[in-house]
Amino acid sequence: MEKSYIVKQISIFSENRPGRLAAIAGALRDAGINIFAFSIAEADGFGVVRALVDRPDDAHRTLTDLGFRVSFTDVIGVKMRDEPGGLSDIASILGDAGINIEYAYAYSGRDGAVLILRVDQVEDAIRQILGRGGELLEASLSR
Amino acid sequence: MAPWNPRIEEMPPDELRRLQFKLVKSLIYRLYSFNDFYRRRMKEQEVHPDDIRTLEDVAKLPFMYKGDLRDGYPDRIFSAEQNELVRYHVSSGTTGKPTVVGYTERDIENWSESLARGFSSCGLGRGDVIQVSYGYGLFTGGLGAHYGAERVGATVLPTSVGNTERQIELMQDLHVTAIACTPSYLLHMGEVAEKMGVSIKNDTDLRIGFLGAEPWSEQMRTRIQDWLGIRAYDIYGTSELSGPMFTECAEQQGIHIWGDLALVEIVDPATGEVLQAGEQGELTITMLQKEALPMVRYRIGDLTAVEEGGCACGRTHPRIGRIRGRVDDMLIIRGINVFPSQVEHALLEIPEVGRHFQIVVDRKGALDSMLVRVEVSEEAFSDKITELMVIKRAVEHRLRGSLNVGVDVELVEPGSLPRFEGKSKKVVDRRSL
Image (tube, rainbow over all chains, first blue to last red; front, side, top):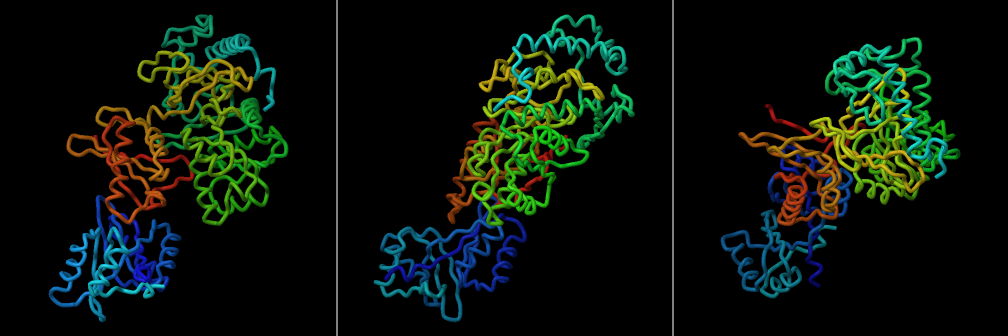
C-alpha cells in the first residue's frame, strides 16, 4: 500500500561549473523525458542535481551512457494547499511524528503545489501523512 | 620460463662482473681515443682510462645528462659515421630540443636480443600473437617491442596507438595473446571495450601485458590483472638506452637489467654519490656494448633501487625495483618533496574514487597549494551531499597522511579527467615563480 507512494527520484553528480545543468537537461530533452521538478544541492566545487521525471529508468540509462554518475533515491511527494499555511500543515504532521526531513524541494503547478521530501523512514512518513488526511503523489505518475 | 640465452642469463655473478669489467675497460679506451665529447669530459674530471682498474672505479668517470645530448644535437656525441647507421629515433622534446639516437646494425641486434630475453622470461614465444600498441615512428616503443617480439617467434600485430575500438576488434578476431603498451592506454582499452560490450577478461585470449613508458604501481598491476585477466609485466627503457629494453620475468620481482649490456648504478640525486644495493636513488646506466651513441654513467632521472642476488627464476643479473618517480617530476610543495606516483599509489587504496587523477599546484599568497582532482566511483556515489563530503575529506586525509603535506581534493564527474594515450601528464603547475 505505502509502496505505491514511493517515487523514484534520479540524482546526478555534477561539477559546479557553467554548462553542466544544460548538459543534463539537454540529454533529457533529446530523450523526450519530461522533468516535473528538480533541485540543485551544492557543496564545495560539486553538486547533486535531483529530479522527478516521467521515465526515471530511461533517464538513468540515458545519463549513465553519457558518462554521468546517476543513482535512484526514494522520495515522496506531498500535495499542499497552494495558499498560506500549506507547507505549515505538512511540516507539522512530520514534526509531530518525529520524522526528520533530509532535504526537500517543491513545485507549484496547474494541479496545485507539491512538496518533495526525502525522509529517513519513508513508509512511516507515508502512513502518518495519510493518517492525518494528507494527500500523496502516486508513484504511477512516473513509469 | 626457459632462458632465451642461458649461458648469459644464468652466468655466475662473479663471472658476470669480470665480463662487465672487460667491456667497460674496452669501452672507455675506445671512447677516450675516438670520441671528442667523452675524452673532453674525462680530461675535465682528470681521469684516464688507465685509472679504471676495477669495476668500482667506474665511479671515477664523469656523469652524462640529458642536457649533454641536447647540447650535442643532432649527432655530435655519436661514435659512428652516418654510413654505419641503420636507423634514427628521435625522442620528443617536451623540455627543450629533441634528442636524436642513432643505431648501428649491432645496436639494433643487441636491443632485440635484450627484449627477446625479457619477453621469453615472461613466457612469450612462438604461437603467441602480440599487439604492439606503442607508437610506431620516431618514438622507440613500437619498433623496439616489434623487433624483440619477432625475435622470439611471436606474431606481431603492429597496431600502434589510437583507433581503440578497431584495436579491440582485432584483438578478438586475431586471437591476440599479448600486448605491449602504456598501462594508461591498456586501462583506456579496457574501458572502451566495456562500452563496446566486450570483456577483455572473458571475450579475448589476452594473457600477457608488457606495460611501460610511464611509471605505474603494484596496486595498478593488481587492478589490471584482476580486471583484465592477464599477467602484467613492467617493461623499462628510454630512447637513450635504445628504447624499451628490460622487463620483469614471470616472478614479477623487479626488472632484470642484463649485465652484459648495461651496468647499473644508483646514485644520490643531490650528491652523485653511489648508493648501496637496496637504497632508493637515481638510476644511472652505462651501456656496455652500444656503438652509435655511447652512454656512460647516464643519469636517467628515474628513481628506483637495485637488488643484487639471483632471482627465483634462476637468472643472475641485477634487478631494479619499480620506478618511484622522476627526479624532475618531483614537486616541491611547501618544501616537501612530492611525487605524482605517491598520489597514484594512495588513490588506488581508496575504492570510493577512480584511478584517474590530476594534480593542480598553485600559489595562494606565499603558500603553495595542492589540489588533487578525482572521480567519484559508481559504487560510492550518493545522493547525499554529506556523504560525498565524507568521501572528499577521507581522500584528503589519506593523501595528507602519505604525502606529509596538506592537500585539497575536488570531486569531479566521471570521465572528465583527461585519459592520455601516450605518456600521462597528470600535473598542472600554475605557480609563477
